[in-house]
Length: 243
Image (cartoon, rainbow, N blue to C red; front, side, top):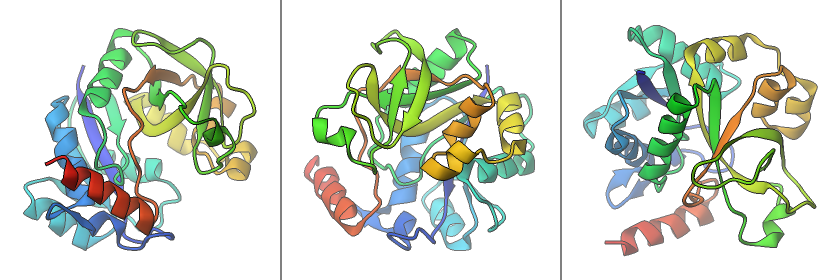
């Protein structure tokens, strides 16, 4: 099975403009993510972006990037355009990594890829244990409820993704990494946005609303995404302290 990792990225994030090019230890956030994906060693890695500055930065740091349209509604649409443009032959799986998680655990990327292959799954994602009960009420932390309890070996189907939950049972912190078979990615981007997806601002609900199963693997840890200036400074401190 051949996997291609595509990392969608853009400068115009509403809460923290210019986020992908903010530096940690002298390297941009987007180039950190690229290097993590490369270290997972599961196949080619490409950044897909609408911004020439991001392309330049990734290439300057030894990565590969492709310019895509600036009118995509979602990162998945951007990934699909990149896949078509790249014309890489024989790709079976597409790994979609978030461009704002420079501390993503490499073992989690490898684990998701392996589970997709061994279970012949069409769409998969990651989730971590919720340690703080306050996170159940926090709308900025997306939750997933799975059919079975997650453990190292389980690749359970997702029941639902939601922003608030009063239920602790089989409820996990969803991590926004996806892996799709190429045919499911193609099917997904052609589907209309569902009412559920629009109301909850969760793209993955479009898949569930159209009877596309999403399997969930347990991640070793929840990466800190960078959405705000505070997130950036906190993560910068952690990553710089590690050295």
